[in-house]
Length: 314
Image (cartoon, helix red, strand yellow):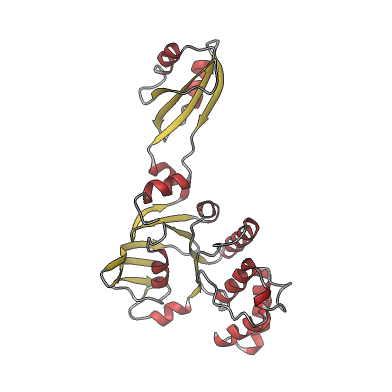
């Protein structure tokens, strides 16, 4: 649905986005992650037509941003990090105003506002002043604004920034509901949010794409090594090292600080494609040793993010 081809943006001599290329399919929820200054917001603003690229192209449904910017904008809803709301207006009046600006006929305005009220959870605040609302509720109003014309593509810049955990969960649920029918692109600093919400994650660092895949595949690609922590009761370190060394040539076993007195502990490294805990258990169960710990370290998105962006401008 969207093809980004060698997209580049310079501010004077500073390259904010450096020859980014990617494709975004219809109905996909894509998260754009990166440290501050990585180029996320600049990329989103070029996608929505607010910034013109220095070079490269954005093609949406066969239309180029260079030739059909207005048509592409008509397919998109955009919510910047700070929702552009008129705080002295009532929620209902504000959304009516947005509907009129967007060319929705008088006969359809109330129907559309009812749909958005149900979708974004605004029913109880429609007649409140926007100035009275919490940041989470203001974000919902901004989301309704972005959704007013029922766009095919929704672009959200840090939609959960500054919200408390309950508000984050509410916005996440709304995004998941909308994502069943629309293509959604959103940036975030909250890594757990991306894991819970996105079908696909693109990590950007210093204006370049550092990773682009599903969360599961990123976990496997970021480190080809799986680490297992093992602690044993009633075992000698030398005997345990010899026994563990017979499991597979793919494993490397290292002694480490024990959990407690009377316990020997090891860190075992192996290929991420296979979980060797079962093999370790069956090897040990034939001895008189007890297992105090047998855990596999999971490669979290936070670790992946740090590994791919270390040295960036945090």
